[in-house]
Image (tube, rainbow, N blue to C red; front, side, top):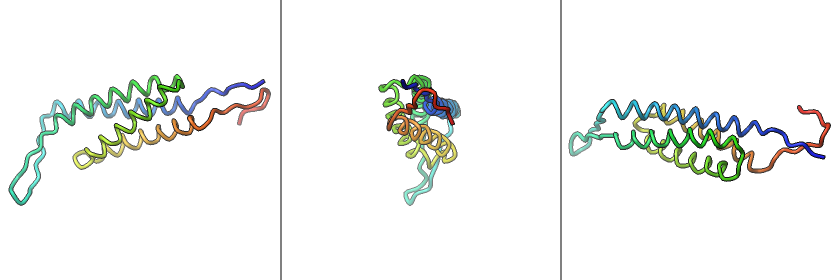
Length: 136
């Protein structure tokens, strides 16, 4: 008889995704409300960038991260795959946005990649031990 261990790695991955999502959501809301315009100097003159669309993208990705983090702890195959897909999309968005907010991108990408590593390790195989064997 085998006993299935409770998989704490998915709980941790879900917590990391929720943390990254909350951070991304708050940063996106702060950028939407600020109305800041970025400027850069080129050979043709001064170029202004309005990043409100990117801020809304961060709000949406934050909501997706929070939702996927909450349901990925259920350890269902679809939600685990959804966590990987959403995590990959969020990493791409933050790598594109890194020149404007490097610290935010570093924090969110780091948390998301750590969660993705835990999810991939979970998908490689479930940990099953014989009944009566002590845990570590």
